[in-house]
Image 1: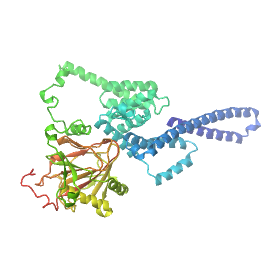
Image 2 (image 1 turned 90 degrees about the vertical axis):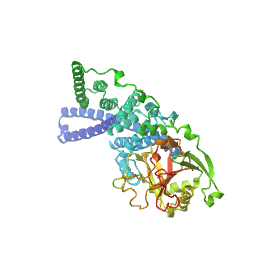
Image 3 (image 1 turned 90 degrees about the horizontal axis):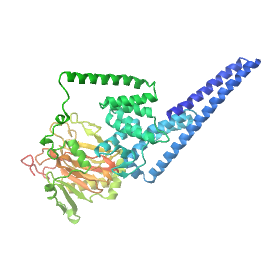
Image 4 (image 1 turned 120 degrees about the vertical axis):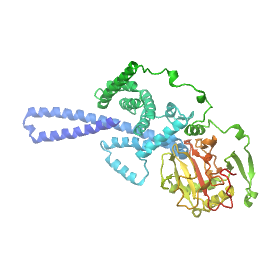
Length: 550
């Protein structure tokens, strides 16, 4: 696409140069000699051929722009009918960001190659008054898709077809879309996903009638990333295929020499090991099967367990589940004696409960409306400095609401007191969070550990004794709150609230409350939470004499 734009630009430059040459000839009084006038016929022939090439390039450019406009219009019409539903699909969200970054830059390049400067001037003004995604947004959206792909074990081809866990959500990705995902992964040093998406781009390239990228570009990225994954022989094969297409490709020529040298070095190393009697051990000896490695005998690493919980593959043992109960409770609160609440036990030690129907739709809409203008990238606290900072392991936007912001906030805070039997006078403000494309928060503690001396120091209200987490939306797929050590997953349900104590009555942190927010696969996840602190709870939750006292 960029080549066609450049061709049009070169044609335009040639027209200008030829006209300048013709002007120079006329100043030389060519009319005085017929023979020289005959030469002008050749000049005119060149100009005509150039003009025809220029018109052809312009028509090709306009045809491409018409196709783009039709594609964008179809997607825009579909999105406009249900914006939230459309954007809750991470593939649609990624493609929207891509259309407004790399795709739109390509459109601008076509326009500016000739007569589109006034249009681009208008676009420059639009950039000043409207929101446009940045290259960082594009990279973030691509990384989010990689995260979803890994966490939920999504097949690359299925994602490219617009399928998430077997459900068709969106239109298929083009070879160019897949190439851009691979390129973003490459820029992040993620060669594993680069290979996956460049291979998918190559497959789709072969099936496209209207090519959306070039095979040479795909092969170049694919070859180098394959090499970086340790497969030098395949990298050489791909490079040779690239050089058959583009024999003078300088980077490919240089890489081929490097790959051949690497293969030769590896061969010498193998021969040397053979001479020294150091042959590679048989495969059976390389990965011995021991009883400790038998399935179910060992606890998976936290990361693996976290992702298994996100996929709904594990749950607490039956001995735990069989003891859980549901009940109506009033918690000794006079008002709740008239309107008892539904309490569901999710776990007993530590005690984690779900309260159903404790947040009304009308309240949710008010909270969302108040929060959106204040949204900022969610932060975490640096335990060494006590300062708040953004982190790659927490991807969401958040806002903080005070009592005085709205009577609904006051009512929700009062409800937190009723649910927890703790005072919120020393609690943090109500935090409202919306998770975007692949939004997540990796395993963490809500409380500060002993080594985190500066955490919450500025608040002067002690540690976070308890957490109340309100779910303000249903989530189509993903988005669970999981506790890896407990093998417990809480699935978002609009209007419910989860509650747990972060500290033992002794004030020691309960390390079993380490939890995470799974990536949102499809849908939009809204939550609000209240972190309750120690100060003021002395008579509401008296200290115990042992670390794990109930």
